[in-house]
Length: 490
Image 1 (cartoon, rainbow, N blue to C red):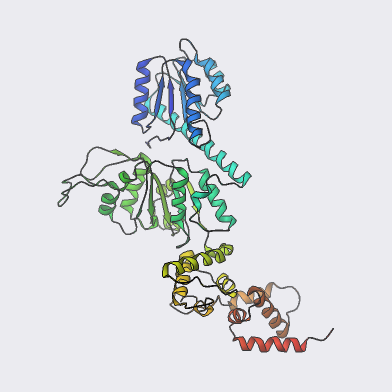
Image 2 (cartoon, rainbow, N blue to C red; image 1 turned 90 degrees about the horizontal axis):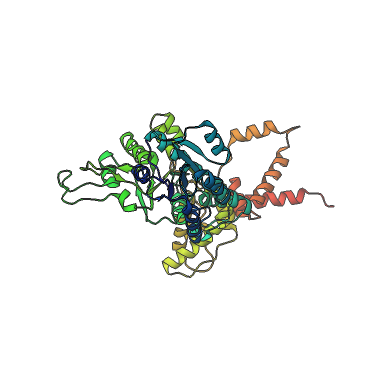
């Protein structure tokens, strides 16, 4: 059964010390680190108030308590009296009623007054843990929905400094930042997908900073790791676990502590490693090699991949149970070609960074550079743009940055053929003309329209327009002159 987890305390209220001891031991054994116990219901409201104030002083929203498990029959203050007070003063806190009173009307009344669940003592252990898990899920869901609602309605970031390393003017990226803030307090895994070079690790870094977790962020690229390597890297081993193991090793799960464990290139994991990761996510515990005692995993798991996991799952290369366990929270980072507003911003930043790193005076980018870059699809995304700019600055000597350094725009990844700009696809062109209503334009009209569109996309730069049309600049000038001469005077 998957382990319980919550960064917030669960409060037990019962006048029987043996029940408090047994229940708290059961919860801690199931994975909860923080369990508060009260034998006197009169102290409950003040405890909830104190925990809530401490949580808000830490800069967080909400009540600061994951759930209350409340007994009904107690001296001094009865649980029936406390329930409506809890619901009224702390509506964010789920209340699970657990009592020896086996009466249908009592259960109905408690649920009507706001209880999340009703259990009759003695409760079977699995039934109790399942009920607590559902209550904790309600608490987490309320928190995430509240945070997401605040972010979307106000278009406001609570921690903009956490995203300072990600340069962007894109609304799509800002929406991702808001989503990151909304899931920051969740303990569920996060799956970050996107093409190579889009900045998936930067998103993982920002998520860790926003979450304000106590531990560090530990990253590991799991591509190509076999069963033995991933076990040793993630889970560690005891001294003497195998031949040559003269010293023990903690493993990265332990190194991350209460922080974040970032697993990159998840799509390349082999079947046996996928099983171990699934067990880690479900049980939140693991066995170091050579040990018979499990250790608790406290780190949050964040994974990234540039592969299509759905397709790999359909091909039988990725476990479906692991896939759905990983993507409780899913972030799809858009490619650079879908956020062209970032091209100029990133280019300027990379020029400054490259010049500083090379000890050169920062060159001025030519005005036509951004139009040229925005017309290229960048299969390598931001990483490819950075490499291109750094190489151009390294070649630069003085004055304005040469546009010639960018014209080849890297050789295509596939086929190793040179690419200047995206080429016209004859098949797509044929389909375009079929969709046009009415008679076809004349060749002269089509040429003039095509030249006008090329100039519009190039923002008036004839060199870029000519390259996009596949002709020389001189040929373009000749066509423009003929068009001017054939235009009748007004």
